[in-house]
Length: 420
Image (cartoon, rainbow, N blue to C red; front, top):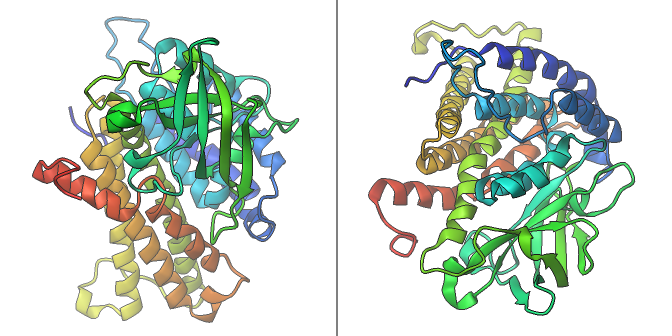
């Protein structure tokens, strides 16, 4: 089965629609929401919810492929994650911070898809196409457990009397944590997926994910971070004190076995979502590079593609090098999402695409600011904002260093304990 590089018709149609949204509702408001951190762009949220609902999908939740009615008609190759990657790249081109507050499942839904039962998926994912915009978030990072996710200290204990799970702990750097938990009148009932241990002595084998719905007593947002970039997106710290969770809200088996099933559930989530984070960064890089080309053209500088390198000016070589970096990173993402669509293990490709995109996005946006000089550094244009927004691509969903370790382990065949 080969990877097709010609965009399917649904993707082309979606890009046309989303480009208008990106230009009119996102790019035009980028500076305002960058300077008014945590102010919520309700117009954008409500518009996107209505648009996604009309298509019968929740944002950031891959669409299920429909079976062909005619059994003799060739079935179209699955494109759920490819379609999603295309959507994300265009929205991030508009404004990556606003893309991150597109209503929908996000990492929370991805975790339910990766580790939840069919019944849990039906229950929790259906709400993203209900009347009000709804958010979900994943809570894994703690003050003492950042890149080493197996070191989490949040604890879930089964209350034998109530047959409920009792959660205690604190999670930090939760993307969309506030909108997923706080009961704004404009929003539906969201949820967070909390990774906690049901048996600390079992190590990774004791890790499980729990769906915690907004309004749960004992669960609250205790802090919103002030950040370098993606400032319109809320990043929250969440406290859980004796929070009672229904027994059926555990994702996976409540029995601790010798295998690391729970931890593998977390990693499966990242395998699906790391390429999507990568493509969001590439949307930012493309925005910056296109802006640079536009400014150069305004000043009479055309990039002469096709000439021998020695005949090009330094600026031309710099721009062409950035084009190559951007396209090569895009190809790596496309391979990873194609594998996800075709149910192929993609841990290696997922982490490779994330590493490449984190590096490329940072380098391109920095080089754009550098070439533009005072114009790039000025707040009159968005180049400096794209530079600030870019760095998060290399940090969240596993830092560049951690993903390089994942790649090395996959290639060399080492376990996590053997190569750290």
